Structure formats: structure tokens, C-alpha cells
Amino acid sequence: MRIIKQTPDLLVLRALPPLSAYWALLLVVIFVGSGGLALFGGDFLAGITCLLIAAFPGYVIWRDVHVDDVRLIRSEGLLIIHRFSFRGFDRVRHPLGDLGHAIVANRPLGTLGLAREARVVLVLDRGMDAGQHPLTRNHYRGQSSDRAAQTINNWLQANASHDGISP
Image 1 (spheres, one colour):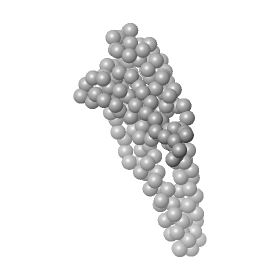
Image 2: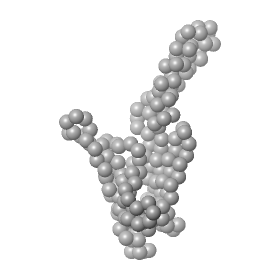
Image 3: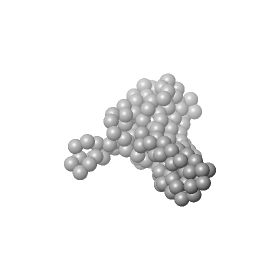
Image 4: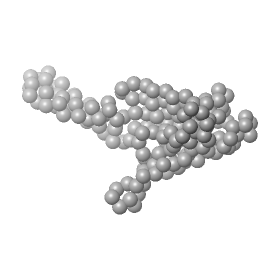
């Protein structure tokens, strides 16, 4: 997750699709373009073949690619999680006072488990939705999840004294 904006009143984090999604999109563009040119040139079989090849990465993009956007808004007392994808838009709102802290959920990568993938999980201590809520469906390599969780916790602690929200 990337930290997009951090002020005392607003914290915005965003998780973009992995690089493989952009490669899949490039494949779709290449094969749709090639198929269109082939059809326009009169080669029906090659055109249909290219379009069918483009259908698989297109389906994967439609099914799996999404952008997660998290906003913690101090002035409104809200935690808003947006998810944008080709299938639609989803928004979840929680009172900011229900948010206790953020943790990092790890999972081993590979059969030996020598590396790890991680994602940020928000822990809501109060309210109807009390429990752990992952911010993204995907786990990511690297330290971005650790930095995002630390940033959320620091932001909550820095502002806890202003409005009584527990860190």
C-alpha cells in the first residue's frame, strides 16, 4: 500500500494492482489489435484466434484487478474503504472511533517459506463490525504493508489526544 496523503485530519492509502496486471492488459491490447487488423485484412481464422487469446487475460483482469483505497478522516470521524474494479465499486464505512489499530498479516511465500507476503489488517475493537478487516484481498511482497500499518498506527496515536480516540 502506498501512502497518498497524510495530514493531521486525513490519511489516504492506496493499493494498486500488481505489475502482472499491467502485463496482462498489454497482452489484451496487442491481441485485440492484432485480431482486429487480421479481421480487417480478411483473415477470419487469425482474427478470431487472436481475439480468443485476448479473452483469457481480459477475463483475469475483469475478475482479479482492483484498486483499494482507504481514507481515515478525522473531522468526520470516518474510516472509508473503497474498492474499484471492472466489476464495480464498493464502499464500506466505519466510525473512526471503532478502529483500534492496524496489524500486518503475513503468509509464507513458496514451499520453503523463506520469503513472505503481507497485507494490512485493521482491528476494529468496537461496534457491530468488531474484528479483523483486511484492507486488500491480495498479499504483497516487500515492506509496503509494514510501512502502511505503522503509518496508520502512528496517525491514530498522534491524533488520539485531540479527540479521545484510543490508539
